[in-house]
Length: 380
Image (cartoon, rainbow, N blue to C red):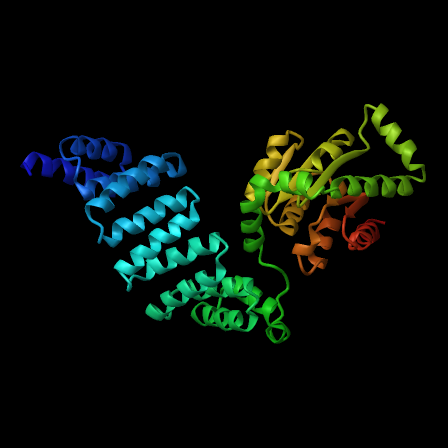
């Protein structure tokens, strides 16, 4: 190969390694014009396209990496990269096949076993995923995350005793891992009794709902016929009417015809994607929403119903609202929220401190009456 060609390729590699991806792509393509059968360059360009553009460039990336594999079938790195490309395209079964072939070529590579396990789990092949995690742990028994991941798969398979063992191993490696402690308590009653876990870790709740945000409304409302917001709004009107000593229908008619909203400041705690927003908006001067999940709050923002939205823990948000000197909330609502909180008293105390006189706190679960009584007791 001429020296100029070598320099061009080395320059492309250097730009790629320094994350100057546009310039690196230009040089890879220029090099391939003169050297179209250069396996490494084909592979590097395919890897770059997925690194930069994800699923949008998967078709070309597949073509490039497969061309590299045809030129060098025994190369485990190329086969692993094909797995990465196919995984980005959410073609999990094909990705699993690519990773499996990479494992066969390089059986002592821990990361490739973990890659294989990850896509097998994504393909709902949990038993095979467990085998792949076990293979990784045979190679690296103290891997920093593999015990937790294997335990999660075993839990899915209903093998709680085995899952508990690996959650314990994860805690041996990282005693501060609150997720491992939570799930150990969930799969083994004796562990829960010995070391009670007050609540589901907030990081787990946020991660769960961030991943669910995109499809949350369509799944809940259209597929599951979710009606909690409407039911909760009925509870709001009933409680407000009882507090005002009037008829529920009369209060609703009055609110609809009046230019003055019933509530001055409302907090939708655990607002999610904002399903309560359109129901509350006509009756509130100021509508505030808070949720742990940034993904859910972003969806709520798109509704255009809220004057203020925050990503925070509920108790923290209510404490800061009270400390900030803003007017108290005269209505607080929570739809399917308290099940994720655990110990309710701190949240209820924060709600009471942030509430205006005679405020209402309505929750969809059975805790609803507790919340109402608590806020009223503190304020009356």
